Length: 604
Image (tube, rainbow, N blue to C red):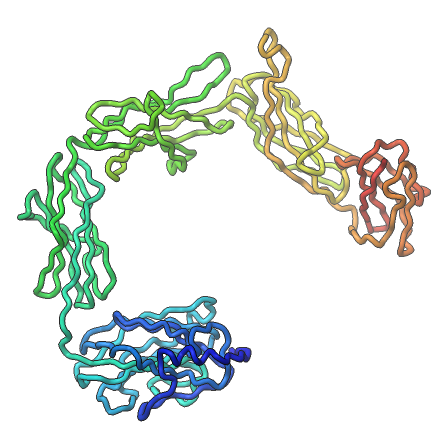
């Protein structure tokens, strides 16, 4: 991919502060083709890391043409490379195009002051790099290099090449037309037996301690040694006597690895010792001794689960989740309630004691806990359970279920049907209240509605089951090609003989969710404002209609803000008398053949 030319005067000086931009003889460098780029921005070799910023020193945009894509970094301490050991390597690049590329690493193994194709010690194939060619962020490629045991010990040169374009083949350490990519050189020192660095081994505090279980923790850094095996020794004294395999069980390189092991079957109320153990070849290394105490007794005991409430007539007050919890420990335990519509629960709330304080409890006796439950105003099935957390370990009661409905009707939306240009049937589904329930539909051009009509049927007796009943109504006089909002509305009526609230009064009102439908079009709709004009607008009575394109009008319809047809005229269409309409906002639709045009008018 070609790049735009960027004048980058001054950028070259960024390199000269930390690296030499020319290559001292006899090592070759490489040349570039103008207007192309794809720079290296970070090179890491073992513990050595160099953020190079690309061949123009930190710029990640386009690069000026004619600049060598070669940098020799000669201000670092030579990188120590051990023969016969795989060395973790990575290259981060800005991948600006999808031309085929690959990565090669060469080392002057025989120290003859030149690179040969046979001295390639690391390679990333084009198939790996090309898979990410469309990435919009810098890409990192991880691989290893291996210095053969036949290499000559001592100071020499390493070259990393990110190259591609013009079909450049592999195994060429001195490309003469580096169309894409960059070359970087570093000083390295090859050695056979570097000074060994023992791994770092740490024992960390135990977690998730219970009466019979605990999780051991530790960390290991292999410090570039061979693969290190991790385990834990534990027991009731510093003689330990038991070994637990760690997860993960091995580590290498310089990455700090956190390891764990979960112990079960421990003795309650007992002090345990443990330490992290690392084995490298014939050598073994240990972390410091750490202790923990298991709790007295067994797991927490949860009993007496109940959903308590009282009922008066048809009124259903709030529920309370209640239970008895024995922490079975001298350590604190936190109690929670989990509930939701499935066994995934989804809602967790802290339980409380009888005095309203959070249920943070300890000891070996039952404690009463409870939590207020305020379900949604619908009929549904809830799942719930008690959760006890003691020292990081969670314990649960069996799943509990309740079928719950509250006062008030429950409304389910149903899609409108039989929709034409001027009519539609509104539908819904209602579970009646514990009182006589009247049902209506509200509809209009917005979700503020404006028009209310009775549903069919429009009344239900107090519910005697949990059955839903369909309701519907057909509305007419609608505006064509117009979106309407509607919803179901229920009114619960106090029964005869009721004093508070008075008989026949509305006890409560529920509304369903907002739904919409769109009337159909009678023809091709054209909303161009220049087809006709109305004036004066606003008006007190007469409006005039004038076509601007020689259009002949067949008729006009006028709708109110709720979308109801309030006026119709198919003769003398050029003048319309609105004196019988109330003040407000209206919509006028003009019809001409298969064209329909809508405008808003205001009657004062």
